[in-house]
Picture 1 (cartoon, rainbow, N blue to C red):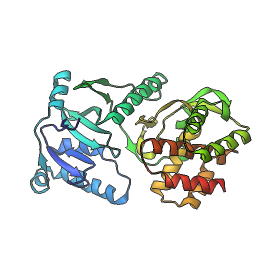
Picture 2 (tube, helix red, strand yellow):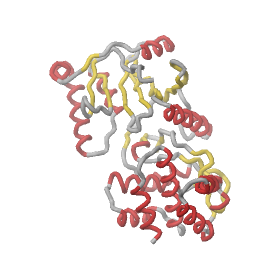
Picture 3 (spheres, helix red, strand yellow):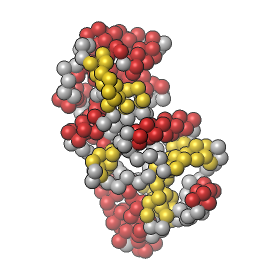
Picture 4 (tube, rainbow, N blue to C red):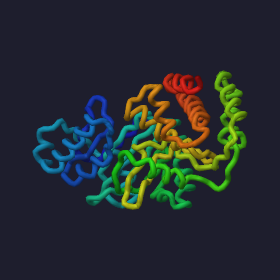
Length: 334
């Protein structure tokens, strides 16, 4: 898959740097540059300033900036030609390189507007994620939670999906709005923890792993839990950067870690965990207090522990470090 090029015949600006780019934005015209910058949604103050400066410069002073900035010109790739033939329209593409290096996301522009966002896998992991996302969108669009896929297909026997544009703003949301969004994912049945398929699957994984200590923690949790919890569709990665604020409310996207037979509260915990850890830079002690204040449930300690063990298993599967999660779990269990 490494020989596939994703560029259209355009001038490109690479952000945050040309050596280690996160995005390649088409800036061939002011209109293209304005749309292209919607693909870049940073959260750090420094990166936000970079985006605002770049967006203003290439939208208001396009002719000047394309003459003095480090711009790279590209020829039209075969993939773009394939899409143009399929939809009988010319495309400009801006490119987002996923941090996990499993896929790219192309913002496809045509005739001055955004046609859609194409997700294209770069490896077997990316193919698996896009397959999961396609299934998630099919299920959730039936419930009117999100819009259906705009199109899907194959290029060189590699599957891809095209998602419709969601007009809005990506950023932090109020706690009430996040709870309201999470409630849309609930199903009808309420079960004890030990009866949930999500927990049964976790127990099976732990039995086959070397994590005996985690198995003991889960066993104690199931013994002590008395509450009933809704079955739910789990987004799997509910975070501020995976939610768009629209004039009709919050709309989630990026369902690559979707769980069909999930459980309520786990998405809420993931949201506040990521905000506390990555955006607020809280240490283990402060993050524990922060999560207990956000998760209003008599069994918050048990639920957060379950969440951390699920995250540890997920991170281990993809060879990502999980020391922070393990240390936080130990701190909560003390």
